[in-house]
Amino acid sequence: KKTILLNNRPQGEPTVSNFEFVTEDNTLQISEGEILLETTYVSVDPYLRGRMSDAKSYVPPFQLNKPIQSGVIAKVVASKNKKFAEGDYVSGMLDWSTQQISKGVGLNKVDASKAPLSAYLGVLGMTGLTAFLGLQEIGKPKAGETIVISGAAGAVGSVVGQIAKILGLHVIGIAGTDEKIDMLKNEFGFDAGINYNTSEDINAELKELAPNGVDIYFDNVGGPISDAVLFNINRFARMIICGAISVYNKTELPTGLSVQPFLVKNSALMQGFIVSNYAEKFPEAIQQLATWLKEGKLTYTETIVEGFDNIPKAFIDLFEGKNKGKMIVKI
Ligand code: NDP
Image 1 (tube, helix red, strand yellow):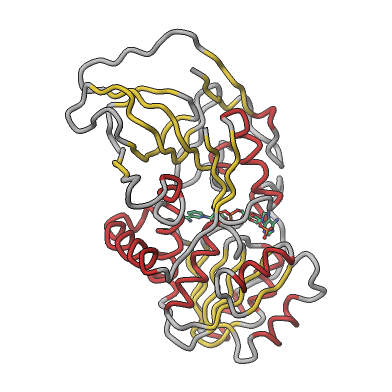
Image 2 (image 1 turned 90 degrees about the vertical axis):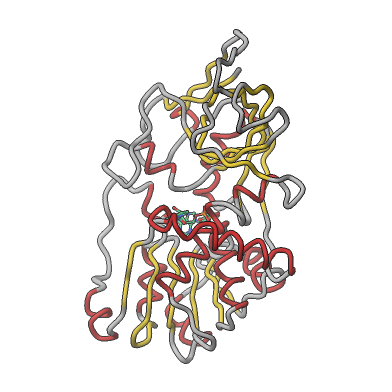
């Protein structure tokens, strides 16, 4: 059994030395009510960076010398719990470990015959829920409106754009490479895209791509990209502040544009979004996402990294934009 612990807290960019691998030889024995799980897929997510620091947040920080946890798909290899049978697959927040014992609390069975198992970490998991609920609950989209999405080629962003297209919006994505922009337009049906690494002026490009202004901004990155979008918001615009990956590794909070005048002038709404606040809407949202998937209206892409030992690197690579769609490690 191999497990990955938090070795020390990152200062700035996370590195592999923040993690420690431990190997134990003893075979795990389950007691009454328990199941033995073998890890199949591990989700790596930008928000884990926040949990590696000890700053107060909406989820408690990881503890030093304790296992890192994230969304995991695992196979039940032995069971003394009536709710789970050997051979079942489950998803839940679990340790970065090749094997572990669980009482089954907080685990959901997933059906490998309905969708590929990895999809339950992405479009049919937290990613899809974040995209769907953030857009619906704060964005309140209406057909004909214009939406801009930052981090558009990532797990959440690529799903937001497709849902917005299904709902009849004009969709503009911002991402870090030309290849990603091509993917947004050709595979996910976005109307236009901006490569923020090569754009000389995102604000000016947006003025051309969205001559009628921006009604909804789905923000995954924060920082100067978001400042540029603010110059283009319309009256009664809604801004979903879902993430701020450009800021997560900063040791000092950046100073920048002061947003209040834009909000006042445009009667605009800017609201922070945390997917777990909407738990009562999860079943309905998953149902809708699964239907769109089945109908072929929604599709997804994944970057699958192979091997347990590569989990930390896959996580670090998120901050370099190495992924297209959902970053997942296959064990
Ligand atoms: P992604 O799949 O989008 O992966 C991260 C992407 O961010 C990279 O591929 C990279 O793409 C981009 N990126 C990295 N650094 C920067 C930077 N400095 N500036 C701009 N873009 C950058 O991750 P997720 O879809 O899982 O998450 C997207 C966002 O949503 C994150 O901020 C995350 O924290 C947040 N989130 C929030 C949730 C909530 O409940 N609030 C739930 C889930 C996610 P590129 O090549 O384009 O730079």
